[in-house]
Length: 236
Image 1: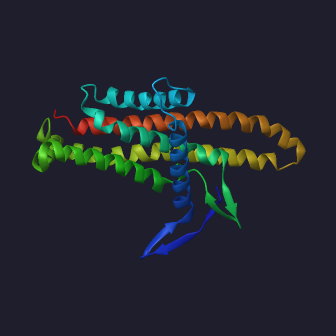
Image 2 (image 1 turned 90 degrees about the vertical axis):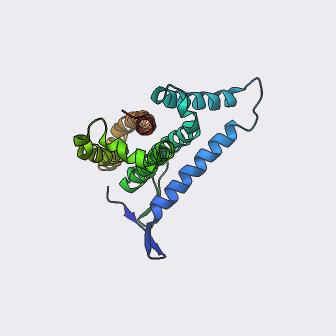
Image 3 (image 1 turned 180 degrees about the vertical axis):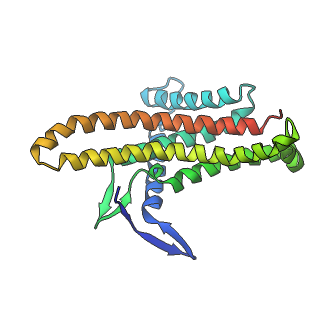
């Protein structure tokens, strides 16, 4: 994709405007969704409340599957917000992209590796923080030499590979989906009405498939985040 982006500098740091705006738009959409579904919470839930409760139960089940002893309840809210944010971010570019003057301003945030690496960093920092909180700093460090000391280099390398696989899996799937949609759009405009009519069913099918892939990737990212957290909170 030959997208061009605006950059701004602030306090010596360089910011990609498209990344920042896309993240803000996704966060606002998540807030609006949850706010709309939770406006009228009653003992006899309506359709909106049922949808919200189903989403909460779904993400709670992800946490429970990773930490079945009940110790993971403190991560229920994190899993809920993480799943919704990634799901909305994955879908954003499929239905709405803002380009002005040849520059892209809004797209799927997760189609950029810096965003997915940031999300992976947050999950891994949460896992390290709670490991230090539970075992103390000394106990946390000693876990890298378990179950035997010669596995220390492998355990350290695993931290890096966990970061890469968590972030790049999400980025690769979403970026590839947007590239293929852009390619189909280019083909649709190549020979006028003939290719446009021929490409429309393909674009609709691929867009539907991309929605499914986006949901799966949100689930996978959230599940792996909870697994990494649970592994940090137990000693081998």
